[in-house]
Amino acid sequence: AAEREHRAQLREEARVARELEREMKKLADNQQMIESALAAARANGDEKAIELAEAKLAEVQKHLEDVNARAANARMGHVYVISNIGAFGPQVVKIGMTRRLEPMDRVRELGDASVPFRFDVHAMIFSEDAVGLETMLHNRFEDYRVNRINAHREFFRVSPEQVLDALKDSKVVVKSYVLEPEATEFRASIGQIDASSISPTDDLLNEDIDTENGDNGDE
Image 1: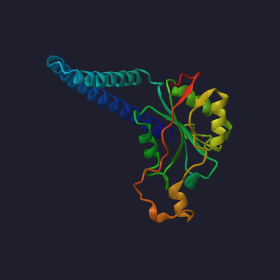
Image 2: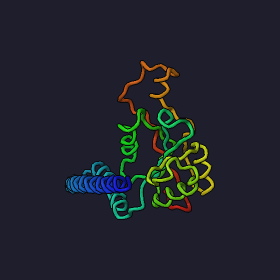
Image 3: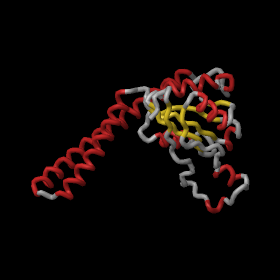
Image 4: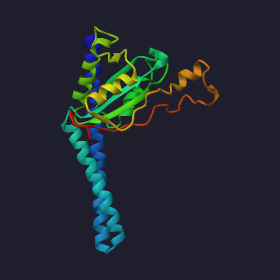
């Protein structure tokens, strides 16, 4: 089991590296095109086009800096707090982290094949030290681990509200946090809501959330 988990971790790290490389190439190509457009606008004296191109160039350069920083800092990423009441019950959450540029991709993967319902997101927290933030939460709830043999199984018998309290205790400024999961597929499956209006391809995950953390370097 430990070897399997290690291989899965290596695959995830390789996927993140490929994603960062693709994004950097795309941004570099965009930067080159915008710089060409800016040069043409300056040659033509088109002030409006110059202003537009300069704004786009600044945006691309900022994004490129962010991606480069993410690639250079293996501790940077998102910590997520998710639940799946249809699969695990109402008092179990998963607390994990991902370095994906689009962190919701990781959450969708977790709910694709191994569980009967998709996960609900209570928080998606960006941090320059996501490793430290995740470790803090894991240590806080160590006594509530569902699997005490394999620490890579990041499920805990706690409520979303308990995790929010832990974040507040650690001075993580939470801008938004979903306490009650929608669990739309599960509720429709047991007849709590009308199933006819739900598409299997609907994205039922909650909106991404940013927070600030003075102790852990969140932005």
